[in-house]
Length: 314
Image (cartoon, rainbow, N blue to C red; front, side):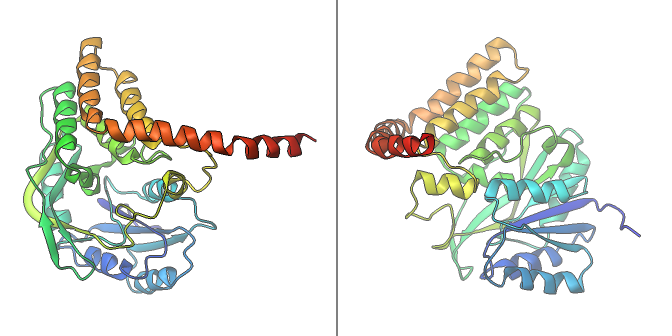
């Protein structure tokens, strides 16, 4: 007999996470709010990740472990844990992060109190591999506003100040809101566009409790330095075979597309567009460098590409 759907679903996408995944699972099991399910989707790990996860699942029926036949990339795996979930509320948990024991309870209180609120998240603290404190967040990260335009502008202003707001995607999110979005698309920074989609639909509320702990360590994908744009593209979507990749331009374009495909009035779209351009103007050097270096790389690769096409057409 199938178990009834829980109120909260937690999705844990993981690949080769044996170093920290047990701690992530344990922090869910230690939550003061008990009506949850934990969906783990392993992206064809080659280490002990799956065996560790199944040990926990054998002792707690709220934990389910799924394994992809091959590595799909980060974005499809993040989407998969949501698609497999059943709860009215949903939260992603990266395998190397962890929560305080009242994370779900405190966020759920706010969502249950206000039906129009799509996302609630706690204050974030940054720690190292051994959980030693590195720093706290720089400012309040709530995104309030009576209109969608005001919320979008507030979100983009926070993004100009620091990257801290991006971690709000790991808060507790109303399921019906996520179902109205594109979730994680197969390009770098699609989580930023997801936050934009959520802000168009309602407020992002931060509670005054430090309950989300972001672990920064040398293997973390967000701080790894030895990847080029193509490596990061394939990390997001394993089947990405593009030779030329323009991640910053793609991210700018996706922000604009999100706004101009929305139901905002024309004046609101123009206001949001201006705020998007202000936000990306701070990255103009990256945009110019990406345009010049990637184009030069393409020219250098052109003879090889033409040679390959001749071989295939022969």
